[in-house]
Amino acid sequence: MADTALQAVRQRLRIAIQKNGRLAEPARALLSACGLAWREQRDQLFCQADDAPFDLLLVRDDDIPRLLADGHCELGIVGRNVLGEACALLREQGGEPAAVELRALGFGACRLALAVPDAQPWTGFAGLAGQRIATSHPALLRAWLGERGIDARVVTLSGSVEIAPRLGQAEAVCDLVSSGRTLAANRLVPVEDVLASEAVLAGAGQPLDAERGALLDGLLRRLDGVLRTRDRRLLVFRARRAALPGLLALMPDAEPPTVCPTEDGDSVSLQALWPGIVPWQRLEALERAGARGLMVLPVERMLA
Ligand code: ATP
Ligand code: ZN
Image (cartoon, rainbow, N blue to C red; front, side):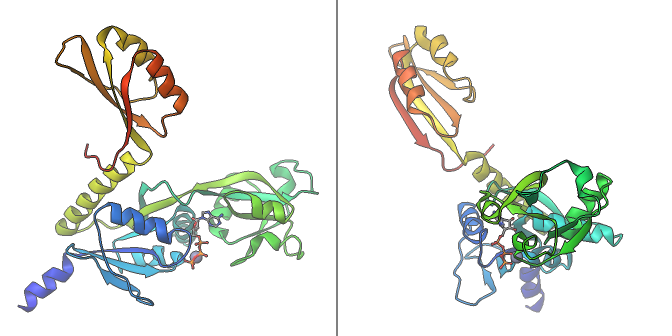
């Protein structure tokens, strides 16, 4: 009895996600799209998925790399910047990264950018020598400066990096930027990208045992299916065979379509996966070229 209970615990995979914040809602939506369902209660940091061998840890994003490294969870959804900073810190201490990026997830996009006050003309890397750069990603910045042989001083701040130049704490900043509005509001201009970031699925550096490995493979297969359908549409229409070459020429960005004969033998029905939104202009051009019964359908799930 005890053995069975233990085994049941061993066979579960634990996934850490951000409890609150920018990645919290899209990470939950992604896991739901992969077929996981769970009930959260306020202030609860741990919950089990309904009828599936997965547990969720609801934590601060900064804690996720350490939870992976210490074996408290097998998977985490976290910004590449947070994962990269933790790995860069470990590398500085002579260690091996204890967590690895398994998939880029396509949300939480931002960049870690070097920015300088707009009043200070940017003269290139050479101008950074001897300057102080404020950041909450010191290890990533040190690695980036080191690769370019720039001898600048890194000032580590845990937040409000963008006001450091005005407070006289630094001459430049290295901060996360998405729209650029916060930088502009603080009279800073981005001059170099240090890292392009988005949310990623991270896994522990160590290989999993066979049972958990199989659970991970199953989840990745669903995840890949979800990621592949994201932003895709299925375009469906009928046309005369003779019109096909002209129609196909209007669909260079679609995947090779499936063409099926219809009963009258002279017409075909055609379906093609389209990346992103199908613009009205393109639909109208297809119609002019002989497409009939045009439909654009959302794609919900796909298996390769
Ligand atoms: P926590 O309370 O979990 O520590 P946080 O305040 O550190 O939260 P958020 O601001 O929610 O974190 O950001 C989480 C992640 O969202 C970042 O690490 C980054 O990967 C991504 N992100 C996307 N756009 C931005 C942005 N403009 N500023 C900061 N982070 C961004
Ligand atoms: Zn955080």
